[in-house]
Length: 85
Image (cartoon, rainbow, N blue to C red; front, side, top):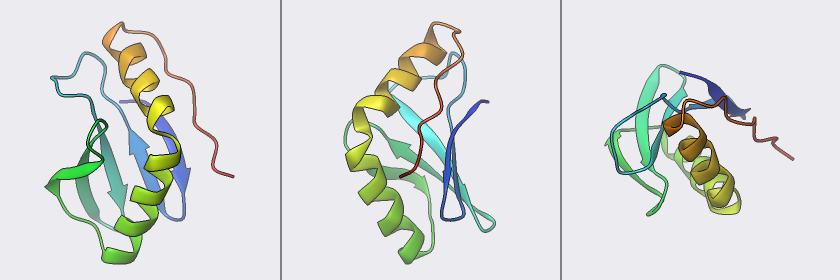
């Protein structure tokens, strides 16, 4: 499962050939969650509220890149890393 971004103690990964809908796996301080890329909502798990807020702000700015990473993984291509400003 490639890591596509790391920032503020949050790590975001996408699985190769994972099931729909497009989503990414989020890890932070012992917590795990799944973020739906299209709706930008957590569908499984949870994060501390401050980390969840940071994640959602970041994901809103990088939604197109997240979807591109998802599509790359579905095609078994290595996704690009998304930099954090």
